[in-house]
Length: 273
Ligand SMILES: [Fe+2]
Ligand SMILES: [Fe+2]
Image 1 (tube, protein in one colour):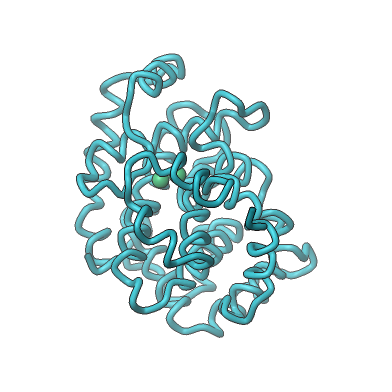
Image 2: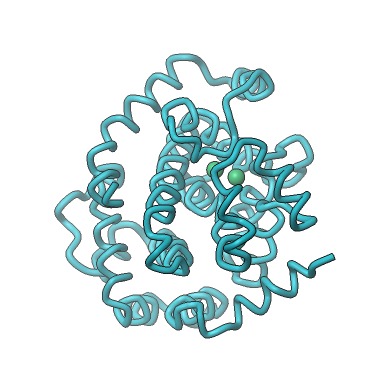
């Protein structure tokens, strides 16, 4: 049996991970590093900085056109959110150029789940919307890790139905587990790591169940509007039960779908779909 965990740890330490990613992870793991340090690290990678600034200007955050640089982004969106955006983006940069289209689809999917999670977080106040947003953004990071580690094996199944089962068959572990391996020891808040780890299995989630639930439900809502099978959790009866048990209503789904629709243009522009 292959040792996926060992491969993940190797990937984390390899030079193929952009250097800036390593530095952000180190800064994220060092409580003594401040705002200026993070800004400088991100600015070191111009394309990463541009993407973080572009995302910070998306209508969802409410500061469209006001943010010109990383410092402003940190000031207006907060240290943790910008750190999370930078980490997520540098992870997505692990895709090679030929995988660009797949990467864009992932990005758009992750971004939609992030928005839907944080909107639901407003309705079920489990934690801050920022935490839900990041958990949504990072929720499928394990798929990116799989693709980076085993491209030949993973490419054929990456957008297939029954993804979890296929992953277990091929690798002995699934992408939520791999996400956990990848995010551990990064000082990314526990509630985010747990939500990512349990986003397909909220039943077994004990701690921070609320955040995991928002990501799980967000995935389902997003799957209703994504017609290209990028979503790996389809809206089903079990999800509907959890949805109503969380005190949400059909109006909430409508509201979230409308918001995602409004964001549609900026998502397409940003991810060059
Ligand atoms: Fe997933
Ligand atoms: Fe997903």
